[in-house]
Image (cartoon, rainbow, N blue to C red; front, side, top):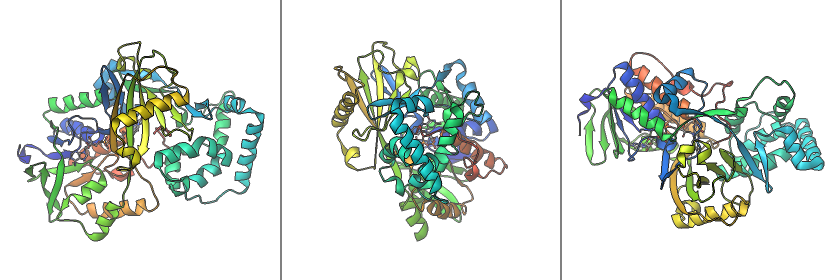
Amino acid sequence: MTNSSDHDVVIIGAGPAGLACAYEAVQQGVRPLVLEKDDRVGGIARTETLGECRFDRGPHRFFTKEPEIQAVWESLLSEDFLVRARLTRIYYGQRFFDYPLRLLPTLRKLGLGTSLAIVASYLRAQISRNPSPDNFEQWVVNRFGRRLYEMFFRSYTEKVWGVPCTQISADWAAQRIKDLSLLEILRNALPGARRQHTSLIEEFHYPRRGASMMWEAMTQAVEAGGGEVRLDSPVEHLEHSAGRITALQVAQERLPLERADVVSSAPLRDLILSLSPGSPQDVLAAARALRYRAILIVGLVIPVADLFPDNWIYVHSPQVRVGRIQNSKNFSPQLVPNPALSCLALEYYSWQGDEVWSMADEALITLAGNELHELGLLADEQVIAGKVIRIPHAYPVYDPGYQDRVRIIREYLAGFANLQVIGRAGMHRYNNMDHSMLTGIQATRNLVCESHDLWLINIEQEYLEQDRSE
Ligand SMILES: Cc1cc2nc3c(=O)[nH]c(=O)nc-3n(C[C@H](O)[C@H](O)[C@H](O)COP(=O)(O)OP(=O)(O)OC[C@H]3O[C@@H](n4cnc5c(N)ncnc54)[C@H](O)[C@@H]3O)c2cc1C
């Protein structure tokens, strides 16, 4: 193993956050070493292969309001960074509805009776408005009324989180839905409406050969700049003394750090549990109580040229387990080279170790095929190939009390002079790719005498780069 004196910063994880941290490091003349436990870069935002076809680990839209991130993306991929039209719909009650909901077509599909019931339910919610909603259900009912909540929010949200909406913090709704409400949908339906809520964005960028193309290009840039990205290198322990990380245990090898800094994008819980000597009891308890929702992605190849035109579909129907279905070729035709085929990726949400998580791959592939038939998306056609990907830390859970736990951990980590945490699971924050990257970039700048509070990234009230598409 190379001695860490060859490097100024050791970065744990080669997902978007860790790679952006390394990419910025080589621009700044800081020598990075990235340690990635998997055999490929890209983390959650990478692309999987299934025969000749490719699919992402959940649909990854490249969209940002951070000009700096957009510039990095464009410079890395130039003409391979496609602009794609967005089409996504909600499947509910055997019908497709536009997503984001468009007022008139939705009401037309629902019929007069249901439409009036929606309006009445909205008005009722305004009269008995909860002034300080503390869970997802109360927050959404305030904004949309109970009827719309039941139809278009509850089932999907409960599939994603695996708990009743009353147990999901209102913070999550506030972060993901922000100021969208029935009134704003109405305003957007009016002729000449100017203000476009960011949930209503209709275009996004996407790398020609899948999201991984971005992370592979970034890795090449890091290596070309003198950095190193080491795969199959899980960081298992971080030794510390006198407020500094002094060595890393990487699989069977020990890497003394000498003067190097450490930036971690490993899940915050794992980081705390791998510190040696162990952390104080309250910090350990806080870390152990952090939870992550897992996803299983079932990729399927189907011998049909055009299944549906959407990039992805939200499945709100409670009778099936699948929550979302992405259609790879609608992200980029190059993901499915044979035009007679389609490649779908179905998302199943679970807790690590639960019944769905533990199902055999073959059973999951059968389940996914059956559910496509049940939804009417497949007629007699059969699945010709399938692959299951398990992602244990897909969603940091915002359950009651998580903020206190994160605060306890932050305060403890602030005592380390050479350790920063970045990214999504790394900060237990619902960061998308752009914000994950920004935390990495600013972590590097903190090493060259700038001073950024990484915890301030992605908390602005005005900004929403992503809707409930996750
Ligand atoms: C279903 C889904 C859909 C999404 N869609 C979008 C979207 O449309 N647009 C968008 O912008 N964002 C989207 N996101 C969010 C995006 O995936 C994340 O923001 C991004 O992947 C986070 O990057 P990261 O580097 O922080 O973490 P990760 O991607 O999780 O990468 C962390 C890396 O660290 C490695 N690692 C962990 N522990 C260790 C260890 N001990 N030693 C060594 N390596 C370790 C992991 O193997 C991994 O490679 C989506 C997320 C999900 C789950």
